[in-house]
Image 1 (spheres, rainbow over the protein chains, first blue to last red):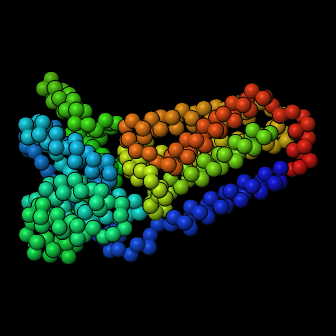
Image 2: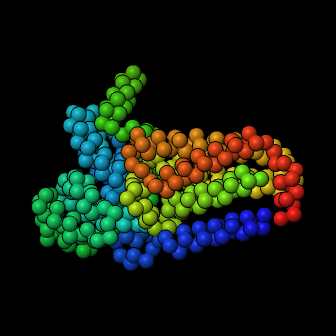
Image 3: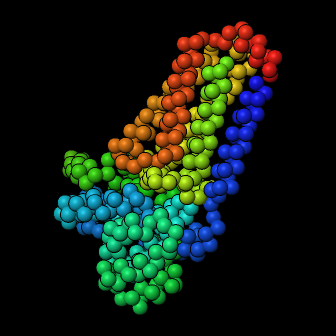
Length: 228
Length: 152
């Protein structure tokens, strides 16, 4: 029996040492990846996300997304264009996308990507930049290399931004506080993973994030509102 | 006795896997060492949390419960009792069902595989088989109990 307890002890200590010393987070030293504890400012709290759709739409979906999250990217590239065409363009739905960058240990470039979108947003092209990031997701996510040059290339060639303004914006890092504010606001709403959806203010717990599921949900919410 | 020892050892391995995934989920350890798998896809999906709690944390709790039960069952005063075997079989069945659901999500909903999750699934499956065998074999024979006393 003693030998058995020694075996348990060796397995336990070996496992804990491997987990702790072999995988400890941090040490990346990149300014972009650090979580910035920027004090809340009026401008940060007034920004309520990237909005698409009619102000009078009966249903609003708030999506908390991380641009490096693979499910967000697949959803954004495959399902969202259909939702945009069938629900948003027809005035049935308004979409609000909020930044929810996961911790840098999980997604190293989320905040850089979110800042790139914010800088495109200054020129009224946030959604185009989001499309570029999601449709080229595999080229930049989960990689060690800094994707800033890739983002800049898409901002110039695909989105058509004024690059002098874009470069100045990225250099300033002025939206880092806003991105962090959005994350903290999501945390206050108990957002745990991405994408997380809120439908007219209520979290939508769903296993199905296909465009068909969104169609059914919007129809259902709209019908309920009509009955009242 | 052998089945309880095997369950203690296997649940320790399962505990370490769950601990690794849980520490990753709360940002304590860095990028998952996943090889060719899609651990990040699975771990950052909405299904990786239940009511805001990382799924891996439930794994940590489950394996701790199995480990403690197996160790208690190995104590001389419990060796001849059937209750630890029953409890181990119950815990293993609950763990197996929960893991089966998570594996279904990986296969058909998320459509991505996390090799650590699969490792945990394999561990709980083996634990279940061993626990059921332990239940069939019944309590530990007096001779084994005596040898446990003399070795301990």
